[in-house]
Amino acid sequence: STSEMARLEQSLSAWVDASRVYTSRGKVAAYIPELSKAPKDALGITILSSAGQSVSAGDSELKFTMQSISKVFTLILALMDNGEKAVFDKVGMEPTGDNFNSMLKLELVQPGIPFNPLINAGAITISSLIKGSGPAEKSARILEFFKRLAGNDRLSYDSDVYLSESETGDLNRSMAYLLKDHGVLEGKVDDVLDVYFRHCSIQADCADLSRMALVLSCNGTDPVTGESLIPRRFVQIAKTFMTTCGMYNASGEFAIQVGLPAKSGVSGGILALVPGRFGIGVVGPALNAKGNSCAGVRLLETISQEMDWSMF
Ligand code: GLN
Image (cartoon, rainbow, N blue to C red; front, side):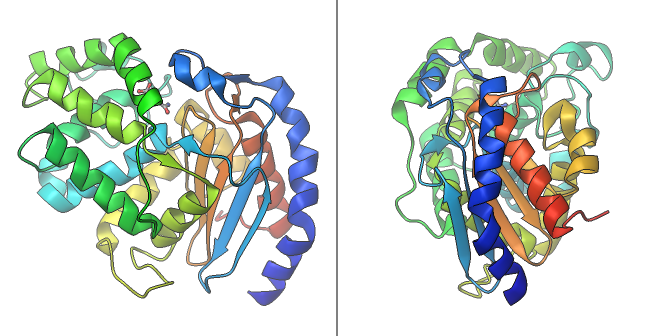
């Protein structure tokens, strides 16, 4: 509403400043070497309303790679390409309680079937389900889809991050071979990983995330253009996964403290939404022990509590 926008315009910068001190409690991800170059004390946010008004604060123009945030949208594209049944024959619907790159349950509990599409094993499986003649065409379709959702034709890859991850991604590679051995992954392992590494390296800023989030918040229709981009049922599935698994093994705590569907990435981005009303993009590269943006989570807690935005 207009009064909520007025409140945000008045307070958002102060909330960012108050949360920024939390950047010093976290660490920038370094397991993908190129990510370690991100500014440690940065924090930025953009909030976009369904009326098309936006408010930004802090380092909202910082560019970062989408990393795990991209998994929400490749899941949606895989659902649009294959339907619900084919997708959920290969990946489950349950949170793991483990790290995003854990292989523990992949071996022990349901051999070969990833628990959900937002952990790495699940997202790699989803990459294999994207339609296209080969990895180049699949990746091009993903990028095209992301451009439409972000309303930004200039979206592209950060090729340094892409190369860095593809050179060092041995854990993901081993996961993919295990999935292939169990007959869950189809096609060549290297091709599937190429699609996965590429979509993780799509570069965005807070405004891009806020627009993509707003489309989810409005059940698949971009309220700015009126265009229907995603069937409502698939948005519902995506938002449910965001709520139960979107913040890795801190999703329960985030549901209690913030109470909004959200998805984080190791670059420090967080995409969140207030159903029917707002899309939110946050960046803060310093991460907490669970791999979520330290100051970003803190900022969302403040905003949700001040604005009374929890869904619960
Ligand atoms: N590209 C990253 C990886 O596969 C994505 C993980 C993340 O953002 N949590 O490790």
